[in-house]
Image (cartoon, rainbow, N blue to C red; front, side, top):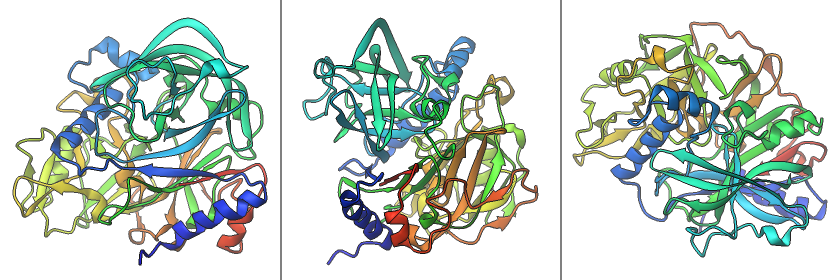
Length: 468
């Protein structure tokens, strides 16, 4: 008999209980390709990340500036056939039409496949703009680029809502063409959760519109991303929790360690300064740290990427590791080695579960491919126009509860996962650099530290909790 984890049972319970009480809970899922990952998938994922952050092979100084503001924005649907995605349900139009959209803190645009899409699969749910009384379309076409393809459509306005939160004139892209196999399963597009400076469509992200209208009790977004690696699961599974307008204390324990963002003003990416990395218990000597090592915290990315010298030094600490001959930028290591790698952004050292660092088989039966790769490919990181030189994706984020908080200053917070969320990957260590932010239980948490998981499930108010 299938044994469901406690967190999954809680999420299923929340859906049924809250339905009777008109809740603010919306189911969110996790998607994986029905086939196993291979080397080409990981190479595509790496190229997607390089293009998104200005290190792609075809990048020029002018396109770097464009990428920073998002006019050639990358998307997590890039040809990563076997990669995982985390999506939530968004309602668009009047009357509302529901779609599963990827929740992505590494981009800022909202787009959804339209009935006019010429390249979408017949199985892809599409937005029928003709059935909506509030749809407004412009004549402006926009193409959003990424590593190996693109999506093109018309910039439009429409009523958009998530649970009880809504905005009547949300800018978005009604997608008319997409690259082949860009959309799979029940996913119809993406909801970007970064800042408006990154928007290719030059529209304000949905969450920022809610903030401007004072709809949110707290200007926070909280994420718990579940882990299924190494287990059997179906193509789409409950995948964690997303809370818009606060945090969900069911899924973390102790304080949230908030750290001030680094980078440009106005902000584009959600990013922190990489301060410290330890490998097998030893501190790695990074080439640059702090604000000189901006690191994007990106829910729409699977892997961890970093500067060439630092990534090579990291794998140099692992006995028996070597570059992958068939995967430029990747390294393989003996599968018998339990990787012990922790990251710090100015506060605690957060350990990564070894299972998250192992992304598949290497060139030998006894070798495994590591989930930390060379992002910059030897580029001069000082010339990257303020773009991040580290990209920290789900390989790390599955090990912490993460909070993105707009304010003065903007902050990103991490907390240890609770047992309801599967527990942490070990006790966080003490970094060498004291945290410059503050510790908090999280403003706008589901009525603070609730007395029980059931209380969290039943909590109502102006906090929207999306359960994967």
